[in-house]
Image (cartoon, rainbow over all chains, first blue to last red; front, side, top):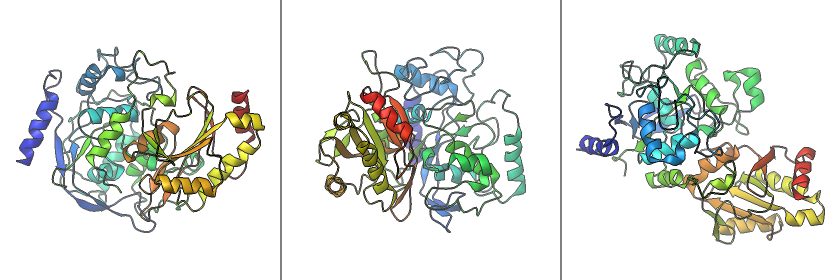
Length: 262
Length: 188
């Protein structure tokens, strides 16, 4: 019944959007605890995540095009510079056309946090929190937390080591993970709601790299997961962004509260 | 605190300003952002309550034991370097990152404790769902800790009369000469 309700909701949202064939469904992520690279408190990095819904794939160019068609204020050239920088959607051919360099099924990038946030709101959703994202991204295709496995790490690190010059693949080109979520790794980096919760001084970032990230005040991140560079690189990247920045590697997906949680 | 209800999130996103053709504000003015702020008297206004005058903005929380009192005293110290005439034209807006606890009563008490000029200063709390957006506009980073305290960056931002961010400082406990000079240039 619940699944049915989601399907109907997604179906309503997508009605009239003929540009892309596959709905970006919200999948249910069950509650759980995991060890985050960003502890909530000193000495204890066990974090509880309440069940929620997450879009199975990053938002695509095609989906974002529909959004700007219905929300002209977010079109390139119209969106105000308080909320987007001058590279906003610059790979598109025009404000309301993708052109040949941006396929409809590629993940949308060059979107600011403000724009991502506005998109999710238009879907009656929100951006996931960092902990929600990190929790889901810990999975491989068969288990919820594969981070101890060398193969998992190697696979992600090999993605990071690729040069950024290649065109992005379409979403869902790789198999889904344990939660039936696609492209948590290997395609784009993603905005999270609380991207500006990482307090990292510029000096530390420049001097020490990921293992010397520090919070002002409450001490350094305790590196229980020190070897987990793959995730720490995300933290370092997010901590370097301002909310209006857009880059070629950063996209997003939306989340919702689970209807189970009342 | 991690659990934010959907309604709150919808408020957040809905509050992002959608500028329109008749919008005469500069595109990079922070007054493009439509939010609702409650001040120490319980009165509601937008971010633009001091539009037309130079404003210093910072984000803080009233129960903060160390850093936030220093933020307030740094602004007071900076103000004290201005001529009386200049100072009369400057406004100060401090925005709480702890709106659940920083009630108008608490904010008023904080203003009185610091003996700030209530004719030129306001302490306000936003809707909880607007906090990340406001912090995003001002480049402030914050994180709530399990004990209810916050880690946050201590940025003081100078807005011009149209709400454009001219410059900012993270200098604490002393006045930043370059920042002071930027204020004086705006006031003259």
